[in-house]
Length: 154
Image 1 (tube, rainbow, N blue to C red):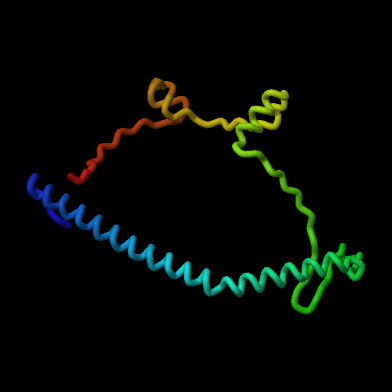
Image 2 (cartoon, one colour):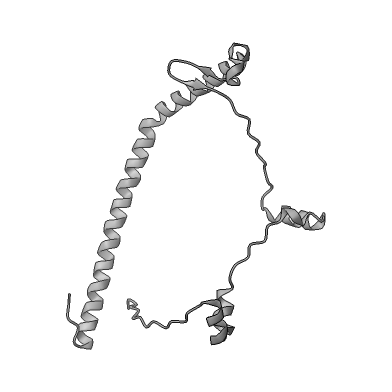
């Protein structure tokens, strides 16, 4: 660790910090570029495999639904094959208009406030600005002041 004993030492150390930060950023960017290239190559290389897998899955699903009579009622419509167990499940999806504020406004207008969730959270800004020491103590909040040095490049 460098021993800072003067303002000149501090300035020299700050200059070195910025040089190190630039070098770190260059290395991070180079790594991100390599990762992006690898991801793109992987995506391109596996695209035909993904498509074939999805096409086969879709074909099995089409066959499964077209042949409901061949499935065992004891297993609730499942079909066990050598390499897979097939079953179906119904799911319900809701498509909300965007932005959701429209739904909130309509709920308020129609008196359907039970469909609006209100999130409670601590107002930290107001506590730090207005709370007395006794109030802080009652709330179990400890006020601490920490001095730190901030470096800004010039």
